Image (tube, one colour):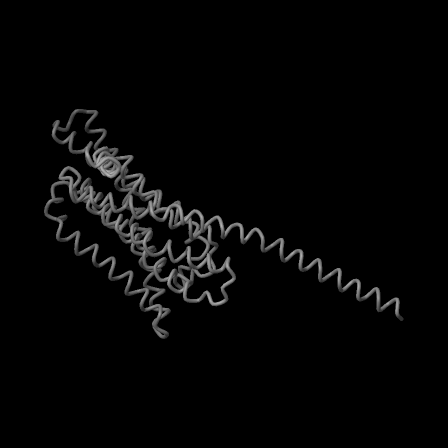
Length: 309
C-alpha cells in the first residue's frame, strides 16, 4: 500500500512539473512576441508622427503640392499622425503593463481599442475619398472642376471623422452596441466594394486613354494632363495596396460581415502592430512618389541640423 502511495505521489509530481514546464514554454514565445511589438512601436511611433506632420506641412506650404489629390492625402496623413499620437502610445502602455505583471489591464485595453477602431474606420473612409477623387479626375475630366472643390473635400473629411467617432461612442452604450457594429461593418464593406470596382473602372479607362495617345488622337495638352493624373493615380494605388496589406490580417481574422465587426481585444499584438505600421509607411510612399514633397521634408531636416542655411 505504501508503495502504491509513493508511486502515485511521484506520478502526480512528475505530471505537475510537466504541465508547469509546458506552460512556461508556451508563455515564453508570447512574451517575446509582445516585447518585440512594444520595441517596434516605440521606435516607429515618433517617426510616424513626425513624417505625417511634415507631409501636412508640405501640402499646406508648397503651392505645387496643393492639388485636390494631395489635400486628401494630407487628410489621410492626419489620421496616420493621430495613430502615432494615440493608438501606438496606448498600445505601448497596455502591453508594457502586461509584461510588468500589472493585474488591471482593462483601462489600457479600452483606451487603445477606442483609438484603434475609430482610426481604422476613419482611414478606410479616407481611402474611399482618395479613390473617388481619382475616379472623377480620370473618368469625368470635364466635370471634375464642378464636382470636386476644397469646400466639398473639407465637408467629406469632417463627415468621416464624425462617423468614426460616433460609431465608437455608440459601441460604449449598452443597447446600441450591435447597431454600431452593423454600421462599422457596412462602412468597411462599402469601402472595399467601392475601391475594388473603382480601380477596375480606372484600369480600363487608363488603357483606353493610352490607346488614344498611341494612335495620336489626343492633343499634347491632354497627353500632359493624363500623364499628371496617372502619376497621382499610381501614388493612390500604392497607398491603397499598403493599407490593404497592413490591415488585411486584422480584418481577415477578426471580422464578421454578418454580426458586425467584433471586439479586436483578442487580436495578436503583431497583427495590431502591422496595422499601425501602415501609418509609418504612407508618408514614405508620398515622398518616394513626389520629388517636391521629398525636397520639402529633407529641407526641414537640414534646417533643423544647420539653422544657418
